[in-house]
Image 1 (tube, helix red, strand yellow):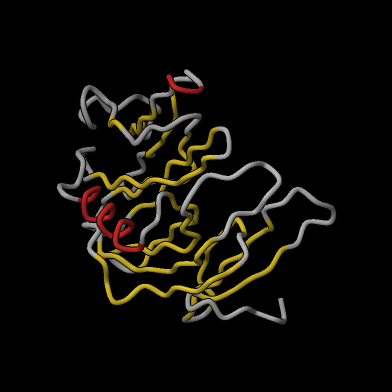
Image 2: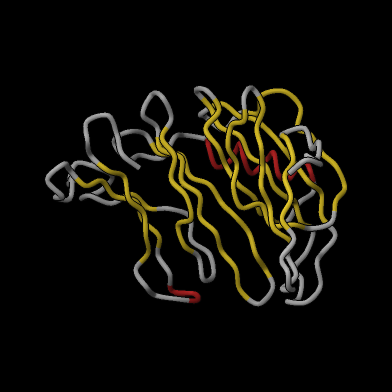
Length: 205
């Protein structure tokens, strides 16, 4: 993700695989050099899970950095978020506030997509209660929620029971948000659909 000064925020892992993966974020200057002032000696630690990897990076208007990390192993899949200051420090209380939100909904894991929402961010996806095998779509609750950049919930989340689908892209469509998703099960042809932030399915898609 490119910053206003031309530097670029990047994320990745150490290639450890399985239990030994370590995820980090860094900043490259316009000349491609590692910015040693970012984080600790040029790196900021990110959430780490089994077979995890950085899946998305987004920049807030004030320069904070929102990073999504996906993890999955033996049917237990989840997404985690980190919010860093422009200098690569963890935003105080972000993880605990977001964790309390998921706990209040009774989810053990969440899979979805993030998007920048003004000076905050939004999440659209599915909360899960348990792990699942590779052939059976689990029972899920579709959730859409908006937060400020500290991880504090804005308004009430939108919830609905739904068949489990994998959100793959969220983008603005006029004043609304459109989420394009594909089905979970590996079948031909793949089913793709779209819905709004409130869960309204776009039948014309």
